[in-house]
Amino acid sequence: MLVERYKLFKIILALFSLAVFANASELAKIYLNQGINAVEKVLEQELSKKDFWLDEIKDKNVSLGYYEENVAIVLTNKSDKIIRVYHYNNGKVEKKFIQKDVLTGLAGDKEVEGDLKTPIGFYELGKKFYPGDPYYGPFAFATTYPNVLDKTLGKTGGGIWIHGYPLDGTRLDTYKTRGCIAVQNDLLEDFNKLVADRKAYAMTEEKNKVRANHEEIAILLANLFAWKDSWQKSDIKKYLSFYDKNIFKHKNKFSYEQFAKNKERIFAKKEEKTIKFSDLSISPYPNEKNEKIFRIGFYEDYRSTNYKFKGEKVLYVKLVEDKMQILAEQ
Image (cartoon, rainbow, N blue to C red; front, side, top):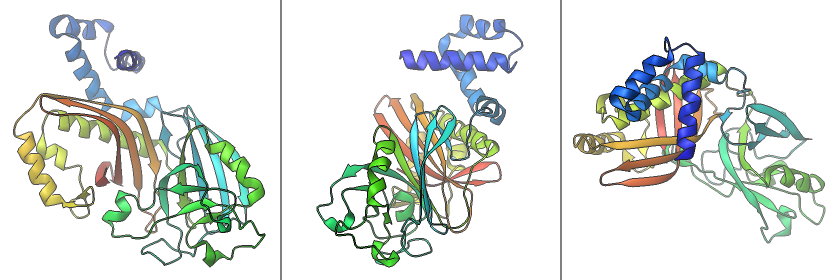
């Protein structure tokens, strides 16, 4: 509760600095006449505006995304064979690690199990573990391939790791990584120290360097809160307008049509609900078509009369002009 009040206070200060309201008395009158909930609703509307977010993030480096937590991003380019580790701290990005001649799987995006390709995309990176096979070096890190977007697109396979070289000194040939990424053993402990104490992600691109800009991040943040607002108000038409009808499958199982009918039934009840988002992250998502795809993560606190949920949620979206289109969610 204290965290939410603090965030609300920060938003009020930011809005005043933007001169969104002519003077403080405007919000004060809303508070006196309608209460704090009415003030919050006014502020929620501002969160759906791109200009608010452009000002909010103007001093942040968003080339590798927007993160409210301190994170590590492990970026591998399969064409130049370089792996880099970046630390993202409060909008500042620091390069911490680099290895040239890193070994990856074959060129191209992973489509099916056994194609020996390293997936192109953006994944969570787990803590180090011991594979029990000296072929993978002293230890390894698992990625979350295939994620829900991969499954929605029909991709198969798994077991994509970042690991070391064989302990017997054998050099891995590219195809023998079977889609994994191999780091030299003498650098693996340095790598571990950089990802061990924070949330870490693995971002893998092919040739083109995939980066975000302030305009894209601001549009996505505004869209995210507009989507939340339509959800909270049970505005089914606006809510469904944020989904890609041709690709979206709910949790990779239900078609868009099934999902839409279920939501129409739920929204028709007009239940009172509150939805809070925190720990936001928006990451550029490399892909072979060079489309503007992003991974959006957040902690969701949902409360209604009949249902409560608290937990992490992830959306995979495509930016089409100024509109977010949800491709998959989990």
